[in-house]
Amino acid sequence: SQQGEEDPQALSIQEGENATMNCSYKTSINNLQWYRQNSGRGLVHLILIRSNEREKHSGRLRVTLDTSKKSSSLLITASRAADTASYFCATDALDTDKLIFGTGTRLQVFP
Amino acid sequence: EAQVTQNPRYLITVTGKKLTVTCSQNMNHEYMSWYRQDPGLGLRQIYYSMNVEVTDKGDVPEGYKVSRKEKRNFPLILESPSPNQTSLYFCASSFPGREQYFGPGTRLTVT
Image (cartoon, rainbow over all chains, first blue to last red; front, top):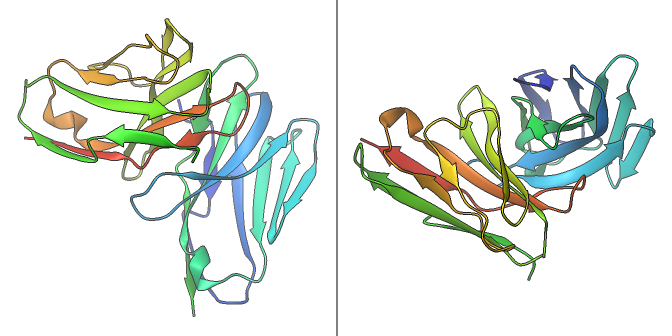
């Protein structure tokens, strides 16, 4: 059962532009996490936002969470070619011990 | 260095030949998990373990077995691999409710 769905599936931008990815989920959560994956490699954790938080920052990353809409967004500001990767949201659902991933957004940043 | 290791990284095998993919972590994490990643489907959880001798099914457990006899190790066993188990496999570990640390992945091809 897919808990998180990212939008868009793919995004292409120029260096210096901002990239916004959205995630929607279905059930109540403890927290929502964003991960990055370079092609074929292991996922790397970016940021975790708890259900009682609305916004969180880490460097050029800004994550928002709207539990009433069951949605989150990841904003990468001033993007760089090195930000090219796939980005996944994952939800830690309230009544399970599972972390459920969405299908991801493929971000391409052109120099 | 804190890490999750998986072996082998690449494996080509034939239908029905039992195989084991090892996973080990050195961060004293209670929670460990196996995922498979297939194009267009994102990451799907196979099995997870909350602690030693405690394992539970994820979303796609059919055809797989796991064991958790020691805290640091969580091997994935395919008793009789089939071609539909050709995939990219990731092991991950974490403290409960926290960000997950992923291994580098094992690319399995079953012919």
